[in-house]
Image 1 (cartoon, rainbow, N blue to C red):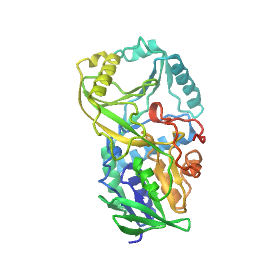
Image 2 (image 1 turned 30 degrees about the vertical axis):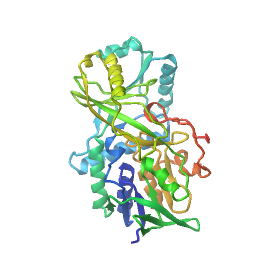
Image 3 (image 1 turned 45 degrees about the vertical axis):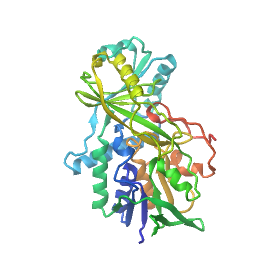
Image 4 (image 1 turned 45 degrees about the horizontal axis):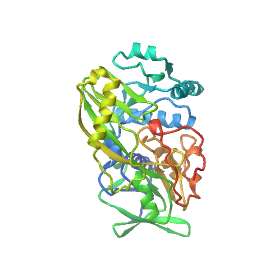
Length: 391
């Protein structure tokens, strides 16, 4: 079996890349160890901000929104971008200063939100407790997409373009010789391809390690709770210091996303269910912030494993031997950073990426030798500082 390109992982990045590669004329196969979007891709909150302080990050966010809108048109409304706005709150002065600085930085790109003093937050959101706040930052264009629907539609687009998707097909290792990738070994069988894209999320590093290639990622767990209760029309809301977020799902349900936990967890040995005591604790925090939710209850939840990088930027493009590409290390921002996979597909097709990927190019870590590094994910699970070697 020979293909122009193989994509490892049928999550959101892999499916988008496969669609674009097949649409560009490549014969493509997607190899997935489980089923389509069987891990974190279908569990995501689907938050897609439309504001940033980084030109590269802004280009990705806007392109992700454009892809969602394109899919919405071609499917007759199946993939809808729900605009809900976004409020980030700070309870300390250091956080408030960071939010004020964000206004100035984003203004240079023409996408700044507005800084809000606590009394104005109280006026606009009377259902929130604000007496402990130091300030807030609001953007009216933020929104979300249902990631499960997006995953299914992207798989359909990839297949319609000619890509094959092999579910239940675990990749054992890559085949590399003379500094070039020649394919993969999957379930004991060799599949030939001069180009391989690894987009397997937190499973990318263990896979490449079996091939003698070390990827600088660290696994961690994100949990989400479904909270049932009349929230009074809240939009997206997060707290700068605590690192959690709230996303509306309906007039009577919210998705409560918890901060990262279990850093360095074995990707094949983690609990897919939030800890009950932790769920109770975070529900209590939400009820203190939104008193109207005092009778709310947790109606379910899930947990997924993700991958972060030494500098909290994604790993995009070429890495290691000739013909190997990666789209991973998205660190909890996999939906909002989805368009990075299109840029990788453009590279594989020998086209110019739609944005300047310099700061996110994976080969900045070509010298990585497996040395442990510090976990650096922060609020919103990404930073916009300049990448640096940190191990």
